[in-house]
Image 1 (cartoon, rainbow, N blue to C red):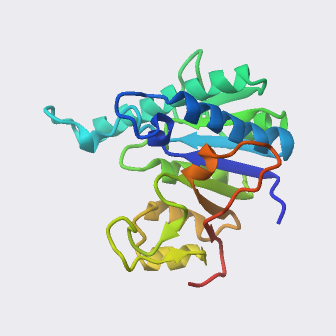
Image 2 (image 1 turned 45 degrees about the horizontal axis):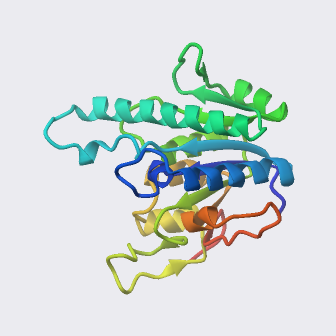
Amino acid sequence: MVYKRVLLKFSGEALANNNKEKIYDPFVFERLINFIKSFHAYNKMEVAVVVGAGNIWRGRNNVGIKFDAAESDYIGMLGTVMNAIALKDQLIQAGVDAVILSAFLIEGIAEKTTPELANKYLEAGKIVLFAGGTGKPFFTTDTGAAMRAIDINADAIIMAKDGVDGLYTKNPHVYRDAQKIASASYQDLIDIKIEALDLSALELLKETNIHLLVLGMDEVKSFETVEEHIEIGTIVKRGVTL
């Protein structure tokens, strides 16, 4: 299947390359920008991007101060805006026009997202960076990515996971009997209560025709040329069983 419109989803931690002393790793940033640019420029796709904020804020890792759970999530949402600003800057320096749309208006930085506005920018050839998550606490950026993909009627979500090369039945770093999932339906993943994805995101996607393609972040880091083939670890869509 040829995809014409894709949403790329990256974890915030990946931007730091798992280095707790850095917010952004220059090498990863270079590879990430090249990866995004390749889909847009070489493959002529309309591209949207969602990135997390784990390189800036993870509430569960906070030590010494107790934050209200909702307020902690709002801090994380603002972290996604910071990452979107950084990505936009680097994309523009790389010669690609980009715009930030956020779940909440930030005057001078991001317009409040709507499906109509996102579609207008995508059709104009701009890369759309979605920030601010869902705009509501208690949802992950996986769910935010699912919502935005539905908003723009994306053909596929391409999700890069850090530390693995696809989805597994269990955490492969903990369980020796974890099995890699080559293909599955959204319902299959819901039934096994897969830990690597937010179940609310799967619930949103299960009745759509949007494909979810999961690959390892190492694929992004090693990506060199626009002609290079990427290795998809797991394909998720309707009508496929484990």
